[in-house]
Image (tube, rainbow, N blue to C red; front, side):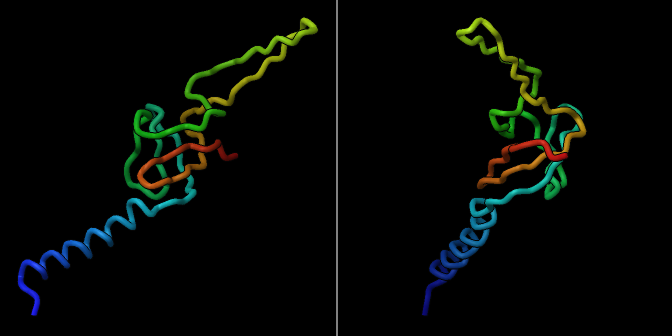
Length: 106
């Protein structure tokens, strides 16, 4: 027969395994909305995530940015990056505990 300490240890171990599979085993794509303060409100959460706590794919920006590429034939190409705005619906990748904005959904 198992001792009380062994039973408690087994119970705690099983609970940690159950909890960790929801936190670290979550890899999904979800939708979200950019709210006031550029916070991210994922559809699966009841709260918003501040900009300092989520990641953004390189092709998107929080601020306007234009890149000028000068060619050898003396002409210039202008590349405008898309900019996130309040109210944008976004595709969000959830990797473990990280939220990553992948793109704007229209």
